[in-house]
Image (cartoon, rainbow, N blue to C red; front, top):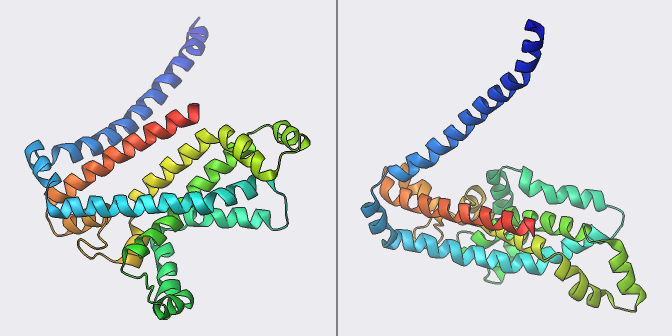
Length: 267
């Protein structure tokens, strides 16, 4: 009888232990978010939302991250299409290279970009000669964000395209459709949810980028100071009010982005 009770109680004890550990985790997450929300009063937050520093950081982040979205669509879609549907030598190598910006610490990515695009760099020399220098400019922010964020789009869209039944693509080709026609009227509609999800994640990653952006564009107030950089600079100077206001906005952006991402994946 006691053995039977022990056997019956084991699943209950296991579920209880798992629930307790999960509770510890979610309590920790909740405490972090609640601490951020309760650091500054609502009146002070509202006042900071209208300060030139916060408004400038928001505008710079929106401006550069939306530019990244445009570049991502232009360059990321062909890469996703290529990796999803074509077989060629070196494909595994390219797929691995695509993972590198995700795996590398952002500061390392930023250092590499700084060396490449700086005044003595291979590309930087050419750009400076043409008056197109990018170091410590908004263009540098866009390049840094693009480098670290676009792989998220490519990987998401690649998986969406690969999930399309191959017989549909074969039927389109059999009926005489050109590759562009198939891409426009078959692949794009069927991978629409993946494209939207990839764009949302890319935008969220670009908005939250710090390390690579700081290395390439610096921390020039109202010129290259994005929301993440402004948060860091204000917090390090001891002025928590604007830092908290910007962090709150970033938290809202992140939460909404995740909701949109999850809703798009379900469609």
